[in-house]
Amino acid sequence: MAASVEDFFAGVESRQHSWPAGRDDLHWHLLHDAALVEEQLLVPYRELTHRPGLAPVPARWIHTTVMHGGPVDQYTASEITTIVERVGKSCTTIAPFDLIYDRPSCGMVGVECVARPGAPARRLWELTTGIDADVTGGRFPRIPADSYYPHASLAYGVGGPERADRRAMKAWLSDHPGGPVVLRATHLSLVAQRHDRRHITWDPIAVVPLALEV
Image 1 (tube, one colour):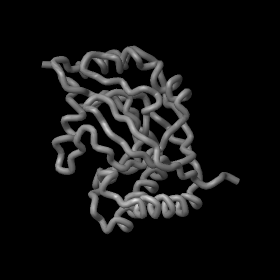
Image 2: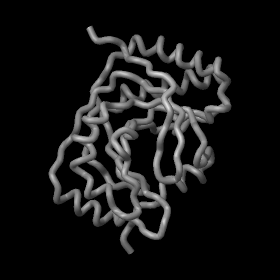
Image 3: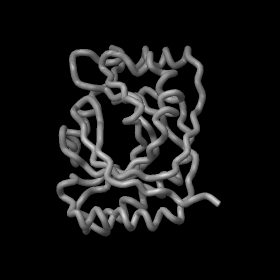
Image 4: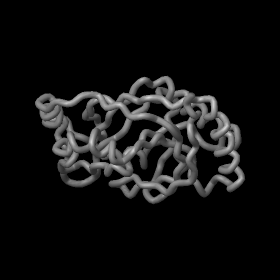
């Protein structure tokens, strides 16, 4: 039997620190211009991502997660204000940087583009998770606890009777040209994020710019 793409959302709902459908969790993201994302990351791969068993991600919801925090309703307003202020102050010393998104890969639970270099994004993960833990007294786990790497998902595996065939998807990729895409990281976005077992959406809370370049 061919390997298939499994349900991404079943995984996040069943893991140790679960994220159930409909619950707003605090997230820090790197977000890029939606028009550039559409043109450079999505359009070339529509035939790959729009298959039965996959939920393609619209350009406006493409994101590179930096931190997945706790449920929004378990933070106080004061904690969120303090987190934003402290992250903002720390980011005044971090310059914008380029992320190079590689061609998509067909993973176990979706289609993703791994970004490099990992070090500047990992620095932001360490910064945001450290501040969150300090302000909240460590009430929420670090997700992931280790091995953070920046990436953007173009489609998620979803529940239902059909599963996307990973071997067929890899064959399609091998026959289609395409190179890395460079997108600039200029700010961090704090959002209240949720899923409905098919799509991930959010409400914006705050935007923190990285340091102005000289």
